[in-house]
Image (tube, rainbow, N blue to C red):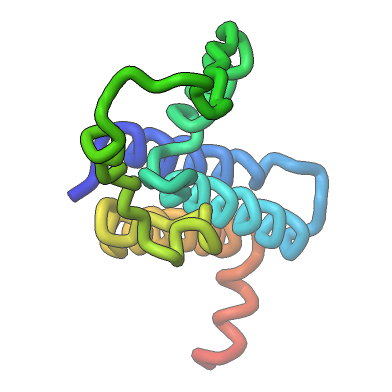
Amino acid sequence: MFNDRDLGILGGGALLAVLCLFLPLSFVGKVVVGFLVLVLFMALALLRLGPDRVPPEVWLSRRFRYARQSRKYVNQQAATRTTENPQTQKKERSSPSFDPLTFFLPIDLAWDEVGVYPLLTVLLGVVGVYFADWLAHGGAAELSIWFK
């Protein structure tokens, strides 16, 4: 379903979105910045990279490790003389079976792993906190106009 990494990222994004209420902006500015932070963290929790669809930190660690290791080059020139039978030399090479979309879509969102329910729960929680803050800072007076 989902793992602790995704829940941690979603929780961190929700906490930062709620902490955006302390920014010295108007309420609309706080809402816009908070929801941009929340959407950014939701996308980060869902993001999968590379042909094997791994999280960004695994993908970056592989790229960093590959960049730092020494290269092992292979001479791919044709042999000058052969000692084996030519029929036994020709063997079928197995190529990796990647879907053609893998090469055109290297970035994917893990909807199947994370699911919609944790994302919706975090979104509704942040909306609830913003609504309570709006009510506490004069929103109740604005709502009372409609209920008179």
